[in-house]
Amino acid sequence: MRQIIFYTTAALLIVLTTIACDPAENSSTGTLQVMLTDAPADYESVIIDIEEVRVHISSDSDEDDDGWQTINEQPMRVDLLDLTNGNTEILGEEALEPGVYSQMRFILGDENELVIDGESQPLTTPSAQESGLKLNINADIESNSTYTLLLDFDASRSIVQAGNSGMYLLKPVIRTVNLAETGAISGDINPGNAQPWIYAIAEEDTVAGTQASIDGNFLLIGLTSGTYDLSFVPTSDELNPTCVPEVTVIAPDTTSVGTINLEDIQ
Image 1 (spheres, rainbow, N blue to C red):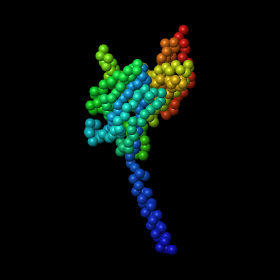
Image 2: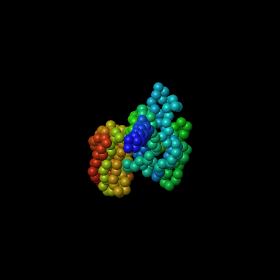
Image 3: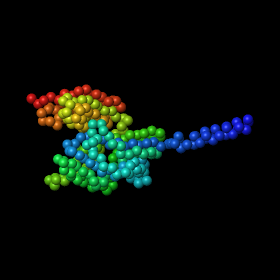
Image 4: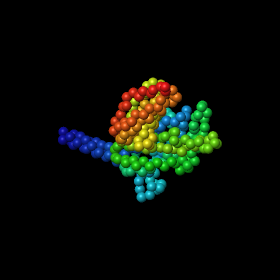
């Protein structure tokens, strides 16, 4: 009987040691998740060709190639106009060593496309193709936690027509925020099918935008705590624009402004 107890205790010790040494249980890494959303633009489609997403951990030299970590290297084409009204696309997720990651390199391919009146137009991005668009992110990755970085790609500001050539250039304008430190504004539009453009404005700066759905609801995400004026710009010439001032957002909550009535032009 003593011999059986001895072997059972030894086996239990081995099991406990194995559990304690399991690296998955003692991971010192954190996770960075990168998500993409978009402000509205008056086009049918804005398709961007994403080839790679990389981040750089802070060091004495932020240009040190050894500090770059790849978040996603699987090419993907995304229609930015599918990512309005609170919709997002996950661009990548990766386990990283803890630390402050100061920069992101957003590398685009050459298959970027704009659709206007059913016709496709190429979008040229020479600088982004060569070394990638660099964004300051200041992402503090902690052990055993997930940091979700939201990239708010402003399609309207990012597309520039090149003089009278008929060509369009893609010069990305992207706002970056820690999603956990942001809130949102929601509401409904009357008439429900009006689909106005909606902008959140802070101190004369348009911070975020969206377009109401065909069902009449809207959601503005990625807003840091603060006070915003909401501007509603109808897509119909028969409706008046309107403004809702001083809407307070307290992260991570969603502030509802109820139903916004768009009045007919008299």
